[in-house]
Length: 158
Image (tube, rainbow, N blue to C red; front, side):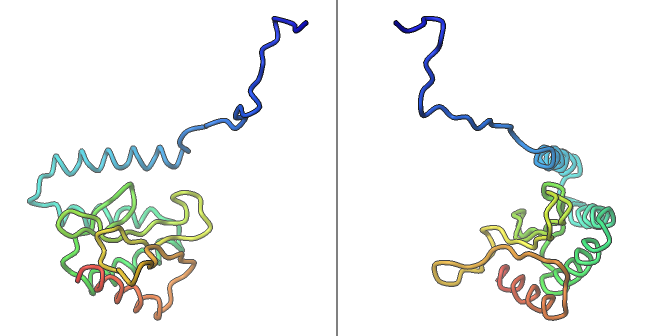
């Protein structure tokens, strides 16, 4: 006879434990909520100027290597696509067209990664067949990389 006090365990029962969002993910969500509140308070009049100062302040907070790359990327984007508006997006420097994020820079420290990331969202017009890259890992930034980023950004907003 089976002991009635013992519970039967399903052979398919999951032993993995869901731990939820990481501290970094929760932090990014809090930053996004703060960005939305700030944008709503400012209105559209000074959004571009205030957005750029927010981006520059965020870049200034980055570690030396990420800051150097972010400053160069910011300059490249401003030169190659001056119509893009700098703004913060989940606490990252990002660049928008008509209010939609086209591209962004994610520092390595953001999610404790081994490299920074320069990425594009779906509004970027980078389509090339049925598959194309939308994010690039960066450990350093060369002149050739800057030229490639400039060309990609121009294509993205074309």
